[in-house]
Image (cartoon, rainbow, N blue to C red; front, top):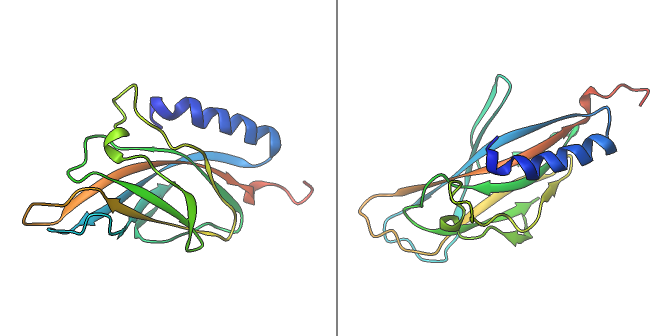
Length: 167
């Protein structure tokens, strides 16, 4: 977990541990990426591909993440490690419906910038819901080949599968 995100995620984890003392609570860093074709239309949404690992399980090139029946996911924040070749923002969806939250422009979310912007609020994805996203470019890709825009999503997972039946 990035040091910049540690305080926000840690505060949520402490709250969740008090609410669900028997649950297994951990963080996952989901990598989002979007391919911006040459001469793209500014403002036209593009699908986001997700990649992440949980233990030995790797999940690659997903456009849709199915939240397991025993888990709840909280998107705490997101960031990028460098200025994107094509700036834009990310729109999050739950069960295919737009959530009333979009990220700030990715260029303002560079993790090494102490004054960077953050997601305005935490997003909650309940058990058996789906997470998807679209990248909305604010610039045109003037190059002759596609450009990949990468960003990182910090997720706190509450896993109830470890709670005993007596709970």
